[in-house]
Length: 548
Image 1 (cartoon, rainbow, N blue to C red):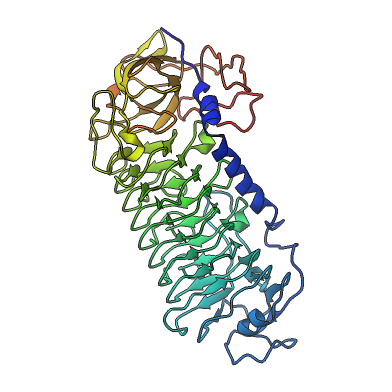
Image 2 (image 1 turned 90 degrees about the vertical axis):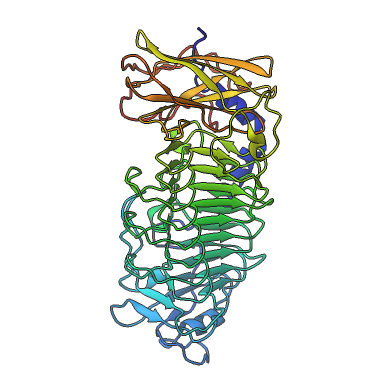
């Protein structure tokens, strides 16, 4: 039996998709250059109007000690920060009677400058503890009004509660860009009760916009809105990281956005979550899908390190009513997950599929390893119609070319080693990674899901008939179920039928062989992991930075 080649496929996949990786690195670099430099601060901006009153009088211009928000927005110019010093403990509720002026180039507005306000300091996935003291309430503003509009470039909005507007909480206009950090959108100042905006929490028609960030103070709470939490309509890219979307401030109870948590109608090369600590989004409790990628302009998107359908702890159910992730309307060449554990999304307990590709989706939507279990539908569903059975030689067209799934012929523990064998009938391809998963239970359909990623193998053959044989020294329990999926340079399949493991538990310490990073080839002889209660973890071998 051929030994299991751990992580070999990850290197080859990186070679197949270099543009996607470079694009993502470029997106991160764009926003790193303009991001705030410390919790609750914005040292890149200085000076500017100070708001001292909560009413909305006819503007006559700011005077020292006498300035409304409307006057501050009219007076602020590039490079200035609008700050707050309204007398009293607050929270101070500002109720505009008509649309507020747009924020212009390089202007920032910082609600955390109000005495008594403070940004969140709780680390990733933990209950937020921000003290919000400035509330923009649109209940008197009339129809068709957004809370704030970003009308220029390099604008920053932070530390505000924006609620009860008839349209979006924040609108990013065409050709505009900005960063949106540390706000509550569609929810009250406590983070516990809905105060919905009539549109989305954030609606982006521009580009190069960041919503949230990796540090605790940058977390937005975007819940309770009447459409989506975040909707992207511009060319992109957009970076969405570190937010709670569809939950309360604790990340334990649903405060649903009425449609999707995040919906990208456009926005190439965008980033939803990341492997960095604090960068993953909690997208749970929404009435539609957790995340929708829908439109021909949606390509090159990386979705990594998020939790969709769970509470902040990653294990308690907090489902989205629809699919965890839905790909449709011509979206193509997007990547969901990754082989190393920090890149994997947890997609669990959702009402529909874990990941669903509509008939209208295109190919090259890569369903890399994730933690996928306990969803109402399939773990991965091509054509959004339940299990799609294999066909001879796999000639299909459609979402992910409706790629055939592998067939497991044996999953057995022999002398402490898990041996998995199977076949794959599909169109010829230069690389055919086989992703191998363990599951505590089999999906009711009999196919999938992918609860715990064990590793990868490469199918061998000349096509259309391939075989795979893997030996894996990863801990598994007698009675667990093995499932596999397949991938090629164009697509990823649905999950295979479940195969119950026969044999005893096992597991040893992990070792690495020699790795040729330049050529993407790993002659690793075996993968050995001592972990009885978790997934594979970071399988990145030393000397190959940036892969996986």
